Amino acid sequence: METLLTLNPLKPQPHFFKYPNSRTYTPVTNNNNCRGLFCPVSCKLSSQPSKDTTKNKVVVPGAAPSLSEDNEPPAVVESRSKNTAGVVVRRLSKRVLSFLANLPLALGEMFTIAGLMALGTAIDQGEKPEYYFQKYPEDNPILGFFTWRWILTLGFDHMFSSPVFLGTLVLLAASLMACTYTTQIPMVKVARRWSFLHSANTIRKLEFSDSLPKASIQDLGVILSGSGYEVFLKGPSLYAFKGLAGRFAPIGVHIALLLIMGGGTYSAIGSFKGSVTVPQGLNFVMGDVLGPNGFLSTPTEAFNTEVHVNRFYMDYYDSGEVSQFHTDLSLFDIDGKEVMRKTISVNDPLRYEGVTIYQTDWSISALQILKDDEGPYNLAVAPLTVNGDKKLYGSFLPVGNADSTNVKGISMLLRDLQSVVLYDEEGKFAGVRRPNSKLPIEINGTKIEIVDAIGSSGLDMKTDPGVPIVYAGFGALMLTTCISYLSHTQIWALQDGTTVVVGGKTNRAKIEFPDEMNRVLDRVPEINEPSDVICG
Image 1 (cartoon, rainbow, N blue to C red):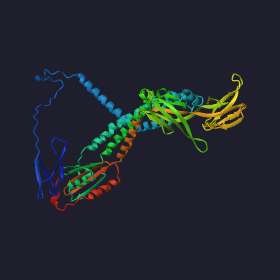
Image 2: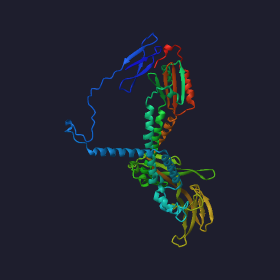
Image 3: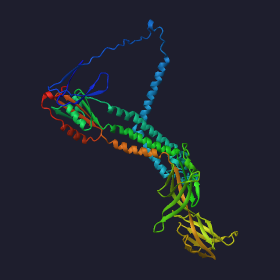
Image 4: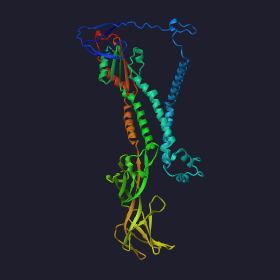
């Protein structure tokens, strides 16, 4: 076989030649100083016959074997059954992958997860069973059927670690992986192949097509290369593309979603959580408060850390309402050494070795008073039930015989740490005093001074090992989503005599694509001399 390649001597341009039995196109640049109009290069491609003299054998059923085959073992029947089993497994795998990669199924899974998340937001999580008995009784079911049995049976009291929610997440993850394997990866493989079109009619049927009379396909390749395209030449054919990263973006989106779901699942079944209300001046150990949420929950050395509440105080609006509350915390290791100290508040937690401490609530634990200049005495404070979400606390100071069946005394009420309202033995208003004001008040012959109101800090604690994975997933999701907007553009061209037929397509920016192509084609120079045209 003899192939004639004619190169343009006016411009040394890179051309790609394919060696026999090779998929690699080797760039070759014409650096010869040819002064003529043509530089014909002739080469003969010959293929040597194979030295393998092995001949194919044809086996006729029922025929006697030849003498050379007397010592060969007969065909094993089990091999056919093994092949049949392999075919069945492959077919079953394809059907399962096809079922999981179904788009309506994936959409249904996503809507199911969204519905379960909304239901988990509506149902109070982590409460005791008695709470659900009262709020969702069987004699007054919601929507005629939804009672506490549904919540406790399906695990909706801990929705985000329930088998229903986690099972749906696993199913969605399987659908994403199946879609990636059956659809996205093959699309990327196809996009990476060099595909040359050898028919002008085929090129003219593309989304965009045009013809350049008196043009050179090498000049077009140089201009496309300068515009960011990867260009490949093979004889009279040209193939160019750019934006291949946009084809990889859907795979990255799927991986990012898998990271988010995996991190969320790990947090649901591998975290610890707990809450505690601690009076000012007392302490607790982290491990005594934190409880496991799942079978992957593993305690760490930080669980031996002791937390001491140094001080609890509040900020107030001008109207007297509580605006913010703060807790000064110190952390001590197992040797009693202070390893960290921080004042936390709402939306400003403390983080230490994977454990996060949030300021979530407050209370009043005790009143410190002087009685007839004696003391100080600590009076216990209890919360009182009132209408609405206002807090009210009360305390009682017995006066007289404490062993009497009709004990009388002085009552004290507090809404916060600012002031104390006092009532006499008859329940009549006696006065208001601020803690540490050093202004005593005499009620029924008893002199009382309010020294201090001791507050309690409501703390929530948790470990969340999946948070770094979730953050990485969201970061990858934002990045790959932006990359997915890159257009994957493909251009084909064919030298048809003195005319170059050009066509192309893109998966995005279809409105701007014709304008871009016209700008590229306008830069292709026109060749006036017929001898300058490359013959295909």
